[in-house]
Amino acid sequence: QVQLVESGGGLVQAGASLRLSCAASGLPFSRYTMGWFRQAPGKEREFVAAISSSGIFTYYTDSVKGRFTISRENAKNTVYLQMISLKAEETAVYYCAASGRPMTLMARNNGDAVDYWGKGTLVTVSS
Image 1 (cartoon, rainbow, N blue to C red):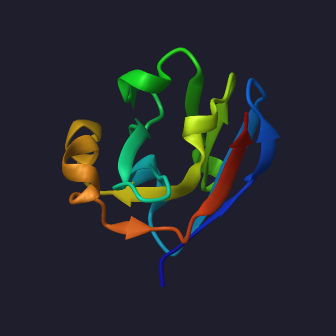
Image 2 (image 1 turned 45 degrees about the horizontal axis):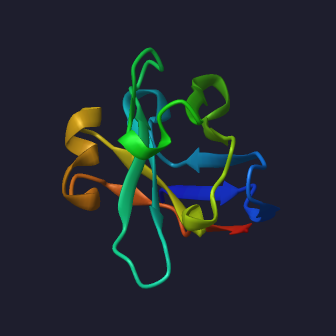
């Protein structure tokens, strides 16, 4: 049984930093593209970042480039999302995702190419 368990969410002020973690089990982690999506209240789920199975390549939505960093530790079956300079409009539930497809496909269509989802962790950014 595949499980993706996110942690690290919470309440922070605008401009603060936060690091999310996602621990994976039940899948050959080092073979999967991993990523993060988010869903704000009343909005559709959107792609945030992805990292290749090797960890060499990363891909971001334009709005987070330069502020968010995705990374992974295959030995620990864990993927991270380091977020700095958070904005109030980035308040959302952040979801960890795993896909057997390349990063660019994972990023399309708001997650249609994702094979597995975590349950999400809430990030609240106060202004």
